[in-house]
Length: 130
Image (cartoon, rainbow, N blue to C red; front, side, top):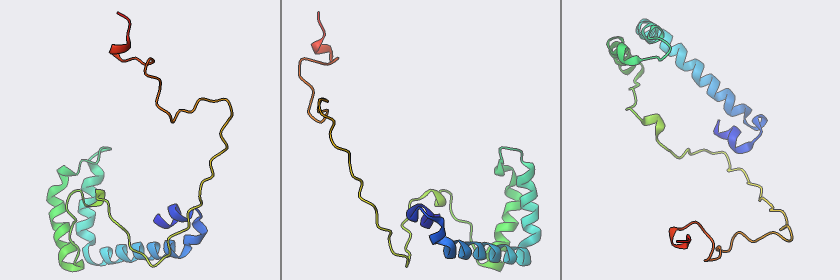
């Protein structure tokens, strides 16, 4: 996703996309091989929790699933807020060159809004008639 947003051309990111897909398939194959039963119980609980997906009701089946993931796949559940944190992604791919934006010419006859307004104009209470 980072490659596509930086490059603005998904064709330049085909190899990265293939690698992400391969990694995802490998993860689910390992999950099915090692923790399928625990995953299915947890998944069914979350699925039945309604459209709001209130997973607080599924803490009991979550514990065996987390334990299985830790023991058999050596993966721990990240702490709350982990995926919300900003992080820098290190890559071997070169940073794309950004095009310099060219501003249009100034339209003649328009007021220059970069300068501060005149002191006698405004809606400050000090400038209002008594």
